[in-house]
Length: 431
Image (cartoon, rainbow, N blue to C red; front, side, top):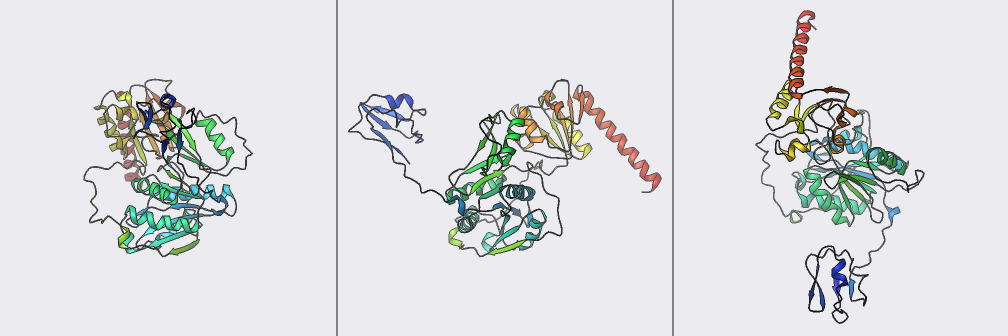
């Protein structure tokens, strides 16, 4: 799609120049000329008094939405192990499928080489069925290979919703599949709904969005994809009303994984991919793991986070000591990352990593809404802050008002004492 100017009609009135938000129109004498900044927003089209500007946008045939059915989850696996986010999304997909209707099922999509044995794990976490796409060319992830086989399957089977984890692979793969299928994609979602009533309840509690014009009894079952926008300062809900499938990537740790049911079973569908070496333009010669320490916040049972209240980067030495003592990993708020005190890989929150550990220590973190959205579902939250009115205390299970440089060493000392008493009890009882 492009914006064009009919030179014979243009009278040089500059009305189009005034309304263009991107400075994409230059004047060559009395002729308006579209430059490379144009985004085809069409703001200039209706203001032209002589109809000299037009868009060559082609009409797109309407999609038969009724032809699409079921919820799919890309069951990302690496080295024969399914990623946690995929198992979380299978449970979320099951919830969405049940809300859409009793005939809607959730399918996992397994892609790789010799991955058939992973299907049972997908059933155990809630999948009704599993599509298994196996080929020697799919043994190592390549954008071309995975995109082709998944897009082919989507075109053939027509799912209503397709979900990917917002991992490095998911963020690379999902937009390419969406483009191949001619549909949209919402990235880094933190909430998914199909029922209007569920979305209204969430929006009223966690966002500032106006839901007054929405009817809770509405039968609209389109996917409502909520994600942070403008650096986490707003929450946007995006819909895909005209195309299918509805596609989204979802951050790890946001959704709750279902309880595992070892007796579960389902339908396994083996798919023969139409794939050749010529379809893959990149050869993966070797996979080299990073030499630097990788922070795995999403899998951690205990996270010790520091914020602006630390005062400087040296404060993270105390947080590291706490994490080492309790067997946790170090996290941080956005303020600490923005100040350059710690790497972004440690950041917890809407613009960092969403986490759900068993214990979350928040030291010197005030509790901005963007941070709370990324950790408030932790099983237990322990907050340390000098400000008794800090928002973090509203979600904390245990709150300590005081100087973290005095409180945290006390926690470490108490933890040492608890370990001594525990070991003494074991020695005495032999248990």
